[in-house]
Amino acid sequence: MNTERPATDAPREREPNEANVRALVEAFYRRVDDDPLLGPIFSRALTGRWDEHLAKMTTFWSSLVLGSKQYRGNVQEAHRPIDDIEPRHFARWLSLFLNTVEARYEPAAAVQFMEPALRIAHSLQLSKFGWEYQIPVEQQELLAALKRQRTGGAPEPRFPERPDAEPFPAKFIGTSADEKSR
Ligand code: HEM
Image (cartoon, rainbow, N blue to C red; front, side, top):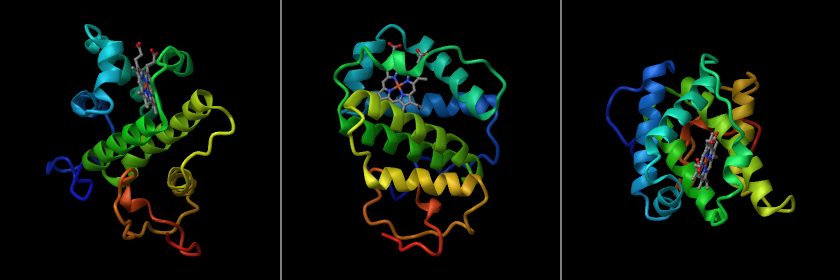
């Protein structure tokens, strides 16, 4: 996968709204469905129910970033029956999600999706793989950088060279000036 270029050349959205959240969800799950690693997991769970899933995920993300709709569900419970999820699936899920968000939203809007995605992924990983599971360092650092950015603790985002951005292509996040870049 080429993570160097955005997935679309369309201008990026400045603010999330209901229509572009729906478009994000559709674009993301199109990529998931086409992905050789993730596609089969989602097909097994969702064949015949994709429309319902896309509607549910639009409500979920709208609840998080717009505060408008009410997602009613239990994310942990929903993933419990999916017993073929491995660590590499999370890396791919996050890579596709962050890349899709980054291509479609300006950075300030993108972080509103990225931080919850990373936070929820983190808790799903711990419940899937056990509390001893070591969250990949790059994932931890990206979450920490996003939190600093949200809480205003971060300086202007830098654009560090990240060798081989897979699996976390959110290049604009950067690290704070007093931290060594990796
Ligand atoms: C390896 C990574 C992941 C895989 C393979 C995966 C797979 C799935 C599948 C197959 C479903 C449908 C379950 C069903 O209705 O039968 C689902 C639902 C869902 N996923 Fe994931 N997921 C992953 C990561 C995440 C992450 C990081 C988030 C957080 C943003 C997330 C949020 C959700 C939500 C909100 C639902 C709907 C839950 C409900 O039914 O209320 N997933 N996921």
